[in-house]
Length: 438
Image 1 (cartoon, rainbow, N blue to C red):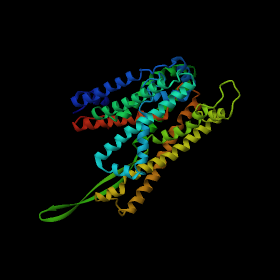
Image 2 (spheres, rainbow, N blue to C red):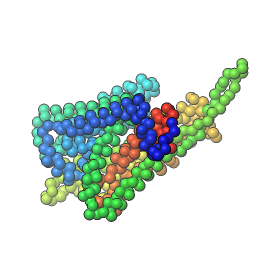
Image 3 (cartoon, rainbow, N blue to C red):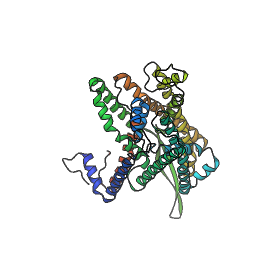
Image 4 (cartoon, one colour):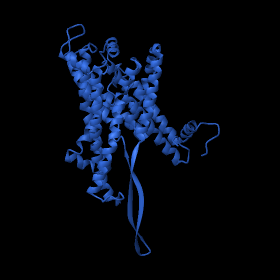
């Protein structure tokens, strides 16, 4: 369909998308499920001191950043306070266990049925992980005076409520994947992050006295977004040729075809950031239980809390963010190689009759692809590491303290928007409409 004159291309594509009954139904289903998610995020757990909870979040920047991913559900300590992150953790654990445990590796090679079984195991693994995470969260909040009752039954009821909230959100996400637009789990996380934008804008107005710093802060955020888009889409094309036999006129002919394998520069996605952040905040969380209260003489646990504090000023802050940088680079290489080994591209190419021009099939192809993925992973790993420390750089350069720029938040938002637009683009192009992306 030709674009109507006078209308911007993006606006016309959105109108075309909503005019298609099937695509309109998928969009409305997605929006409806997100509204349900927002309602669930406002259902609080019983026995919570909301005033003490608000004061705790105002004093702890790390909790404030984690609250952004839950869309404010953690600040309200609702049944959805943990979001879908126990499921994300279970998925990561299964990804790492499949190549190690022979039985799981056999299941994963059974095609669609095998993937369904792996997904079912991931769901079952999510339940104990959600229970442990919820219990640890409640114990910490009880230590801070937010959760009053330490009795067994109230604690069990709150943990069960948190587990139910997580599994309900996972179910909602899968309904989006099946009947809506985009990857449902990612859309749920995306909605939680976007829900925190009004509060971030409000905090921006609180920094209006530092107008110059606020402008630079916004420029850094926009430049980081462009940087993320560039590296998410960046890939190395490996040329591949296929040969096939065609029987024609009583004789056998060999026909050749060519294509390419797109190896992404950032194969690992945001997983290295999750690994690195989990390790770098863990010592501070544990030490917080043994630290002396404010006003008392500091002990060694207080020193550990300050050392692993993302809000620590220079030069102490360099340790936390430097360690975060190095761990991100290390985990980017580790997770990329795990994923690449699971894909088994050399054997897949050989089974399908494909080969890389100038490279012999088998071990030589494997050696070549491993060399390429290691080289381009350096760019992807450094990209993730730079994005990881940008919040620290932005804070030190601009002196804006009231806004939290989240690396993972930006990665998730940009990635989900690009993925959703590509899916809608495919739907429009398939129906001969002009899409979003040119």
